[in-house]
Length: 248
Image (cartoon, rainbow, N blue to C red; front, side, top):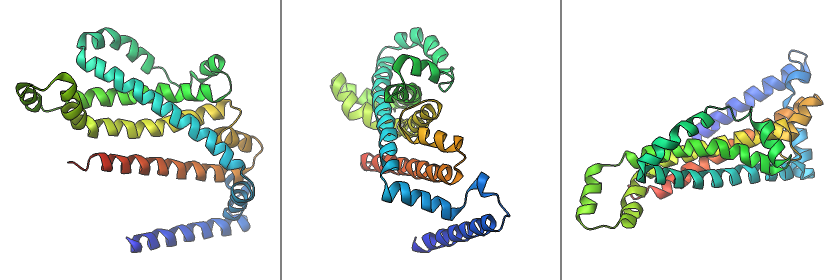
């Protein structure tokens, strides 16, 4: 493992060195691509010296996790309703399919009109993405259970609530978590996309401002922060999934 880290570190150092050399010698225009030293200086000024990026990161995380939690809870409850009452699903499915087919980014101006420029409109965009992703995985997970297990549980006299807590939910966790992991990523994408279109705070708004002022070092620095944030989100969900699936 340590050898792999060293190899990746060496490769990254070589690539950054070549990038810096090309930028300093005119091989690459820093006005379009920035340069590592300028990116490092930007991050130092806005992360260490000044808390500016930390504040904007906080707004983005607030919108991301709020939309993820609200969308996931709504999707889990709706999925449970659909599995318990298939007639309701058949009735509602055409309407949900029509809404899901709409591109959410194109609906962002409408959300902004309804909820304003604050974090509420970003939560609405993220919610609309998370809900359908988690809903599909919830329904698929609950319907993909081994029917023999369910029959045996009923035969042994388990009540519906006991079946849900001890059989249905644990058996569906792997499929549900694949949707939750994807939903958290899309929540962040939706929030950042909404911030880029119009916002008062957030990394997306900062990215849009830096791009409009041709500050490519700042743009690359914010993109690096977003990349690390995405990796952290994936790591968090993977670690949580492994913890919940230790019984397997």
